[in-house]
Length: 463
Image (tube, rainbow, N blue to C red; front, side):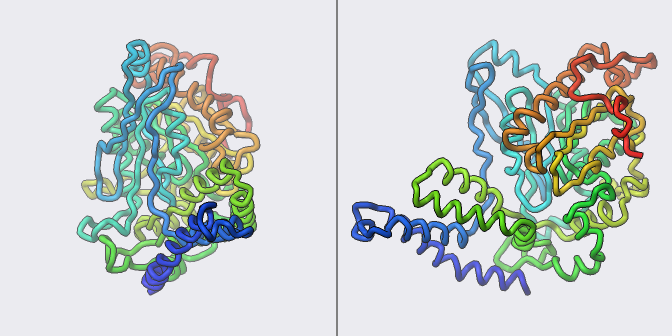
């Protein structure tokens, strides 16, 4: 019923938001009679703010049309390679007419970025994608809004998420021989499960795994987000945050965790910060500070755009990751597409190098939660395990903004490159050697590792 009430309210507010937008433009026109009023700029700013607060935020576009590589502009063509009921595998294909640049980018490694399915769209990783495109072939999981998926497409479970990731990995492997995988926040857990299951079956696993700011072990340094998931029962979540999609959407009748409830939770975590941001926006409108105005709009166009999550997937994630800790306890079984249960065994991963990244000030995934992957992946040789703590970075800072570009990305780039070269030449890496089914011991991947190996830190592999 709450979802229907929200939709009714949104429909009623839409005309007022449109009016506020029109009024803002009218008062901003200096040639109009209203624009001659001494208070016109303030009135225009007030109406603009009302419009921004009342408008409906749709899914943003990635909008990456070109990147620069060695001084040459590379055109980007965005396309869907695999279309699943709940997710699209999206590729950012690069084009150039410069022969030297073309030869360079053709040999660069392929990376699958697994975006979070936790409220926001995959476009939240726009900066991640744009930066990675300079040195990699980039694919990303673009999760669909569950309210747009008809009931005829069936349910979506956490097991389905894991199976999707495996299918996408195999797709890249079929095109390039192998690939690298990067997970940001929520997907670190299902990605680790997907690679573990592939390893247990004897399948080829990705050359590297980069895991950033995710709740591998949510018992370590629990945050406010973790505490909510841990302290409320399964039935509480089912009774208080799960609703059926109204009739005016393609997914009518589907049980979901609505995006508007998630957005309310996001804002409630830092209400003072958002209030100050909007007040600063109002003042910037009056001053005519276009740079700050554009920055505010860009941020909130992304932040306010949220999607519904299928109820089964959401509730199973709460139980598996935050209440029963099945991954770290070794009790997680995933149902494969054939309906068979398979135990997730990260210790079976042997031919994949591992890099974990955490933000020093991360208030969503606490310190040590992502690094815990190293202890679980005991089958990976120590010299192929690396950990990076980004000083001064919060949760978003490890994959977006200046700290991502200047601090985190150089480590990720060198980590992927080092193991890609070792894999291609067959020399210098235990990872590459095992992928070629060799039995002899391999040397380290080289001195230019992405970060300090875990073996050099007594606390790097959690006890």
